[in-house]
Length: 123
Image: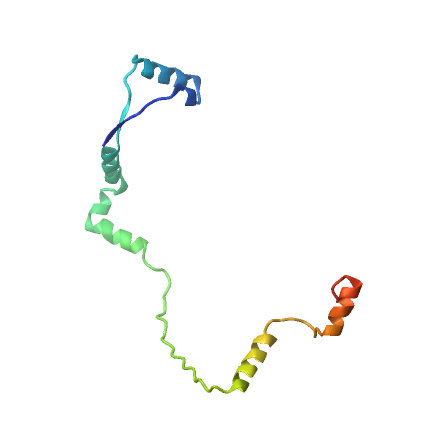
């Protein structure tokens, strides 16, 4: 796919670029064309070196990208939940969750009322 470049002298960043763009629009210089597909194909040729196309190169690439540390395979764990329907089980679970919040101290209605009267949170 060949695209033709349409220069705009007003967007040129240097005086040389502006003069070149003006020359192209006046027809004094040839308009450059870009073949994107050909450029892409050429870039693909440069992206792989000749050594990488050989078995030795493939072996060297595997060695270079191999894991350096041993990895363990995770073991499968099975967890089973037993639904008892007993509300006390849920209350115990809620207490456990509430205790793990890390909140310091006990906050009750009197403490909140005092804080509102002072306008500052209590210490």
